[in-house]
Image (cartoon, rainbow, N blue to C red; front, side, top):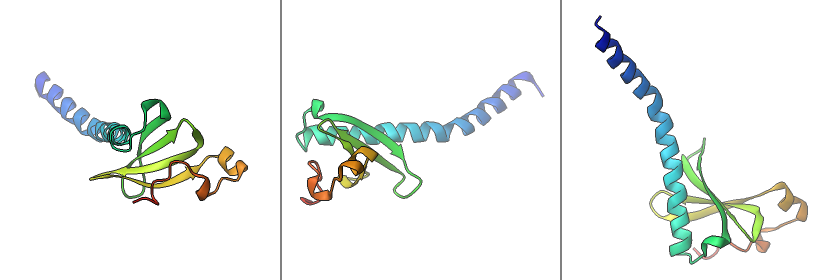
Length: 115
């Protein structure tokens, strides 16, 4: 085979291998940005109230979600879905939150009750 054919084959194989990784990383970023925009523009949080928004690829369905930690409540990670509409799904307590004995009624940013 000619040398350029090998380069084409190599490029196709590389593209096939990298495509899933790029897809996952892009969607994690996109979901995090969608949730961050929702929190600031629609839920009226100030950016400094949000400690972090992280896109996550889940092994369960739905495949992509966002984890949000608020600055005044670092013991709780809130789970948001952002497929069609942005919606808070639930929360996870950190070990520190569990030690403090947090209960659902203590959560400051639980919007599921309002929806």
